[in-house]
Amino acid sequence: MDVTNQKPWHGIGVEVDANFSSREMLYKAKLDWEVSKIPSQRPKSYGNQETMRFFKGFFEASEAEIETIGSLDGSRILWSLARLNQDFILPGEDKIKGYVLLASRNESREKIEIQFIIVRESSHNMLPIASTAKPHIKNIFRRTFNPSFPFINQKPQTFDDEMIKKVATMVDLGREAISNFAEDAQLLAGKVVDTPTAWLYMFNVFQPETIKNISTVGEKEVAELAEKNTKLAIETLSQVSEQQPGDMTAWSLLNAVTYIIDHRLGSNQDSRLRQAWFGSNAKLKTRALELALAI
Image (cartoon, rainbow, N blue to C red; front, side):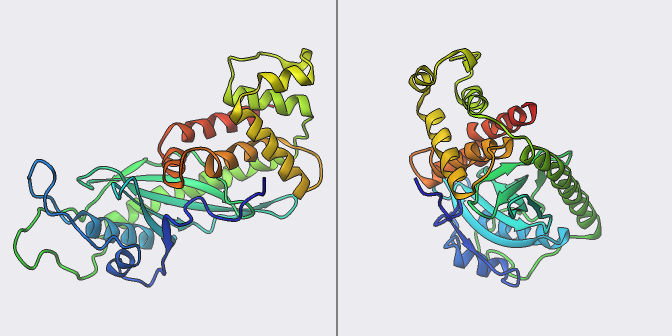
């Protein structure tokens, strides 16, 4: 199994230039359409345009560099990623990049969710980073639907001073969280582990009730007890070790888990990305990090 160089959002999101207008970004992502009525026949606002303008304003206020926009789940979810320039490098030239993710998952587009994540440059697996920043913010560009022309003002909208300060504070807390995590990552990269520890870790992540202590169980029995995801994570760990020779570490264990979640689990890329950002696999990654730190 080769480690992919494709980003988890490959084919789902499109790269955009920060100098693009929000309308140009929507056009490039093929999201420059609106539905004037929801199933109940009540008129709705032009949510895609309003939300993309909010994304652009948010990133400009926080001095984050927008990279990608896209949609998930039949365009129900609108999202965008921006670089925070909060990068760090671990042993072995393992470069980690910090991002802020904005997403709108509700039909009204009134609430914008905020996440801070890191992405490994080598294999593009992601990890959510907890922060004390509020996890959502109100979309201030939402407006009442106007059934007559002109439907919406296409002039750029900007945040006022109060909103700029609010956004800057939130993103500063995210940058701080990533900076603090860099210290944990350095510790994980320095924790050398053996094969029994690796198996125990994967069991604790994917099937914690199966076995409590594999140190007294033979290698053959361990392999027989392992379910698909546990085996896949161990296989991925072996592949990574072959590509980057050296001692196996707690950091490599964690990355084997996040890698298969982002690139191997789920029926398709759309499903994988939704689960990795908003579903059960996001929680699984957090658990994997906690277990790695506890080694």
